[in-house]
Length: 407
Image 1: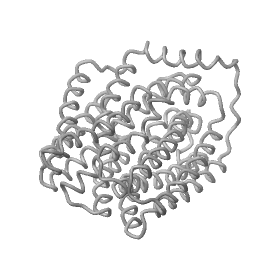
Image 2 (image 1 turned 90 degrees about the horizontal axis):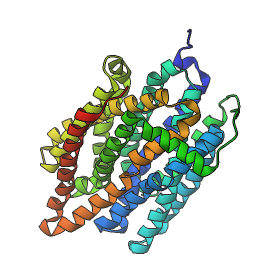
Image 3 (image 1 turned 45 degrees about the horizontal axis):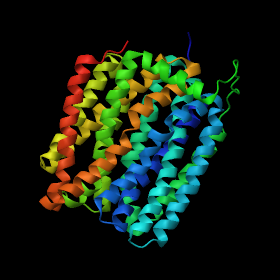
Image 4 (image 1 turned 60 degrees about the horizontal axis):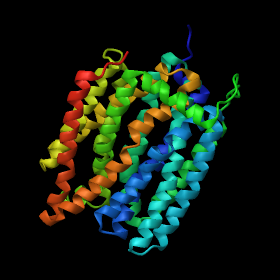
């Protein structure tokens, strides 16, 4: 079969440009949200709560989002979700300009980030389901690699340090910039030209549609095991990320720009993986890539828990970013190729309900761990969550090495 080169496909170029804009905006608020939370409160439980509300929608809404994805036009969903995110970003901008420290502003911020996370659930699930209708199946690894590369470059390499520079001017600026990026993304999606989806069979009722997606996943034992392994890693991984702002402040002594720059370490590794990852994945199985991702994360958590020298932490953060990106490209491409197209939205949503839903509880749990351990000392308390993450990561890696087999 003769395939057009990926970058000659105009629809993919527009999708890529849209992803670049949204990921740059997401990279800005990845720093701005936790930093604003630390300006409004010093309570690690409340800071963890803000991170929790961003990810809780994956647990609450992932399954119905899958049904919506399979029923409605994908492009319209992406546009609607991004328009809602523009409004929420502007609301966060207003909060950053007017709020004074206290519990009430933090709770308002938590509510806004919950709504923002809810829109992201629908958008992210739809975006992964949308890609196979934009490119050919043999191009999925290359296309996913390109999309992950823009997430790393814009969202984690450029966005975080840029957010630090903007915060030095005003903590509100990153939220305004995100709204502008999302507006650009909407324009790119609107410019795409795709045939309308034709529904050839009647829609099942909501509950029956949910059940069909869940049962398909449950009966596919390799994919089900992968979902639970991913759920365990996202529990510790999002907890890892949620309190990294406190680790940076208390242990490393970084300011906003330094924290943003610190976040780019993993992005450097991830960006390298997006460039050479598709080549590597032609030579290794998805299972091997996933195991490498687990090992990389566990080593990074161990370095942080042991308060290793900054240069060694930097090395492990880069390795974690590289191996984690291989994991992402491998498992997303595997799902897009493995799951039948009429079920892709619902099975993807069921997979991410199990695989991403626990993230919210990890973010809150790690914040609570720091609060519980603070009698030991402010800096020492921040080390505990990373020791827990390393121990759980090692256990999950052993389990996956023994039980995870992907067809």
